Length: 249
Image (cartoon, rainbow, N blue to C red):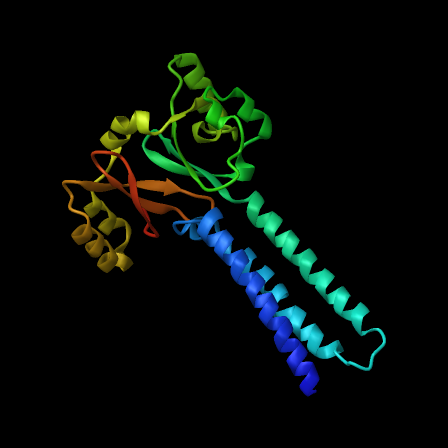
């Protein structure tokens, strides 16, 4: 039993190290700024973590016996199961990672890797939007078409279940070049009090931290939980992501 415990603890330590590295990549690179909350990826990560850190060492504890001829085979099977689960988890998390925070008329939309049809990137006007970003999350401005017929077609398409403006790279433009337009849409922080009656203390801290003359907010619509973005009114730069409701629904 002592040898089993030692083997299991060594396995646990190695598995935990892999989990920490994976966690740093997921929450530091692929889902930064609390975007794990916005997308709900934490549940997938914890599932992978359970298989990798708990199930593997537990199986080692059960099968480990230095006198067994099949010990190497059994341990190899356990490692293969762990690696398969880890690969599945990494692939799922990577395919669902946020790739763009898109300004869309009067709010931001969080666009994930699977939200845009691969063939749509070929229609992008700017070279930087002709392929899926491999690392990090890019800030984008979605420019509405000038042609009234095209604009109407886009609107009706979105209402009938088609892609909205934020999910069509054809309309993507450089965010910094449109900062003045974004700045004009920024709202006052004190509005958040009415949307978050249970988090008034957090809203008050934000108001104290960010003077209303220089800072405001805009909504971020996401797949799992909508969030609030704090912006500089002059530059339209995003200062902070906050897990507060940005509207009344």
